[in-house]
Length: 492
Ligand code: NAD
Image 1 (cartoon, rainbow, N blue to C red):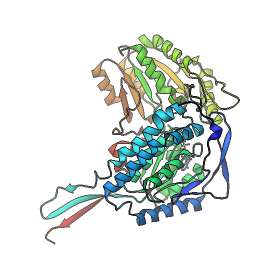
Image 2 (image 1 turned 90 degrees about the vertical axis):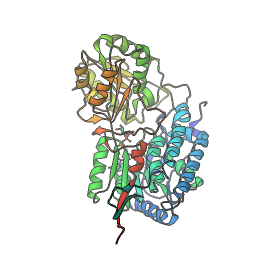
Image 3 (image 1 turned 45 degrees about the horizontal axis):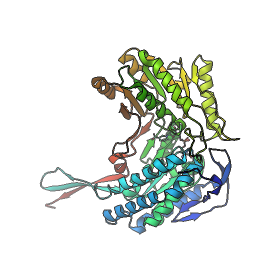
Image 4 (image 1 turned 30 degrees about the vertical axis):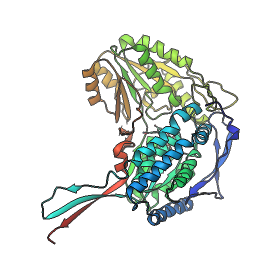
């Protein structure tokens, strides 16, 4: 895909409720393009009453439309059609996603849009596969479980992959027969509206998939607390996840899935085959989307014997990346989502350097045009596990390097006080790899690779403060269902 003109892209500065765009008077938020900082829209902030309208509408649409009660294969057919429409809409969706987020247009075409479509297709296939089970009871009884949807699922998404993160929430919820009210991030709010439009075109009944716009404090909180929201599913920071969990409890307890932050280690042993390939893997794991990835491999833990040659190679790769606007097809390093986020990255790196760490490269912003925030990939050495750069989720292209001499030391360094989202192990020794797979406190461990495959079947989710429950896999489908036990006395 060639570069495109961001000014040519129009957005709907609206909510999407009951199958239609809805504009509301009231307070708004300026929305800026990450690539150049230019404000391009005023986002309405949905208040409690607007959220109530969306949820009640979803509830009635859910009950009246027969979405939950139709033949599951028909629901699957509609969702497959939805997936096909999303895939075919790439010429609209990819530039829309790229304009308003940190996703380079080339990646939006190659990955975000097809991956969103395929995720919807994956969950469509579950619609008629899981309905409950017959239980082992004595022959005087028939016992079974029946899988039933919650009704309205409230979904809250982050800004880093707006379409993909939203699809991980809405696809299993819809396939399981729920209605959804989605609140995207206020920083990247528009591309999901197009998804909602396409869902209606595909035959998802109007009102079954809604989008409310606004910030977290007003709109997100109202959604979480609404009594007709039967289940909440959230992706975002650990801090917000904790607030949402508390709100779910205060609202009278409701189930919640939380996909939260991470600070994932990449452990490299000296026997890892092909050091050039390992360097590529390690570098990519912290520079994709400029490191604004929950599973970014942001802590390199490397056996001392190969630390220097590996660091040299990673530094070379980092220096070869060139920052560019998301609509510039040549750029190899994405922008940072906002100036405030870039300042946070700067603050954490500066603090580490002041405390004695050294940066082999980066540790400053890149200049692209007059505005927009870009951060040069940064490799920091001489850090301890107490350093803020090692402890905090930086959410930028910043890699810390720590060395070890033994497997035990590597495991100790990999352990994080809070997070346990993902980990990478690079070694030729299968026994050692398996020992680490068992030992590491992480929801996902990759061996001799870093990052997901194109499959959807492996669930993703964090250990410890990186989350509660799973996205993806059969697990995410089942998390959108509740199971009713039925016991029938056959002689009664
Ligand atoms: P964030 O927590 O600031 O915001 C996420 C969403 O929550 C936004 O839509 C926001 O408006 C909303 N929100 C904020 N406060 C709220 C409240 N009190 N009640 C209800 N909603 C509220 O996160 P972010 O900055 O958008 O995203 C980056 C974070 O997301 C990182 O920590 C990253 O690791 C995490 N993340 C995790 C995964 C995963 O799968 N584990 C995936 C992507 C991102």
